Amino acid sequence: MKIGILTSGGDCPGINATIRGVCKTAINNYDMDIIGIHSGFEGLITKDVEELTEKSMSGLLYYGGTILGTSREKAFMRKKLDINHDKPSIIKQNIEDLGIECLVCIGGNRTQTFAHQLSEMNIPIVTIPKTIDNDIFGTDYCFGFDSAVSIATDAIDRLHSTASSHKRVMVIEVMGDKAGWIALHAGMAGGGDIILIPEMQYNIHNIGDTIIQRLKQGKPYSIIVVAEGIETRGRKRAANFIAEEIEYETGFETRETVLGYVQRGGSPTPFDRNLATRMGGYATELIANKSFGRMVALKGDKVTSLPLNEVINKTKFIPLDHELIVQGKRMGVCFG
Image (cartoon, rainbow, N blue to C red; front, side, top):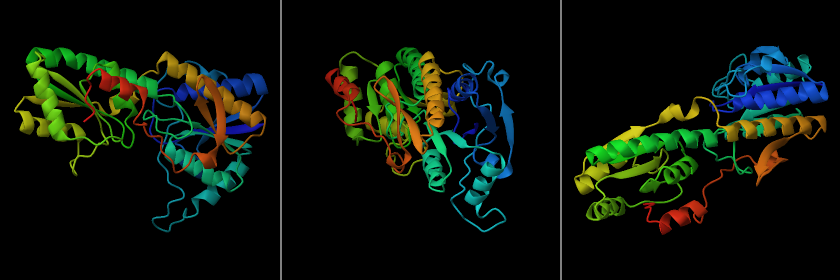
């Protein structure tokens, strides 16, 4: 059996470990042939592919990024007519020409949607969820999330000493456009005093009062962790907006830090390496059993799968009764 594998959307730690998990299982356990597709779905339009072997997998477990490259090709979105205006049909034809019997798609929410659309065209597909934001519906965790939380937590740890030395308010912005999973987990792990996430409305007056109250308690500095997707009244950056509002409310010197793409880079944590390996292996089992049109998922401590049509057009938000929120409030953390 010959399978194709691609990575789509933003990069994150653990993609290469996932590729390795798929390929080594496919080659060693099922004697399958692997076609690596470069630059995501774009590579299926241009036939930019290569054969992947056991040797190709050397050193991938801890290597960041993706050896296959990635893109944000939107083949189902037709903004203008051109020679490739029917890209889905071209992709389907090229899959047939390459002899690919199942396509493995590693990616986030948009990738899951696109994969489902291709699946509706009778293309055998299995997907693996990938995002540092951890907002893909149907899976408890995605690989890349733990690595991003680790990076963000380390940054928060480092800001504590600067904030304490200068008696400042420090605002740190982490990724999370629609859901605040990184902000919540890193904020709690890093001892954030105020944590702002898109799922919860905040009142800037409450934030100012919290900072002033901390000062009265002999705590001359505060750490504020914000997700990039919080409401900012049209401002470009969440950290900049919150810092300006705090200075206006309290008069305290406030500085902001935006982690940005640093959260996507570097080697995956041991948790992400093992999760990626397990998900990659499980995806290959689905292919061997001809269970197509499904996304691999982690439920509790068990790797399983669910139909793609149950995943698409949904976002996994933080429930307001999440244990970290509840416990944070008990400990005096302000959520806005």
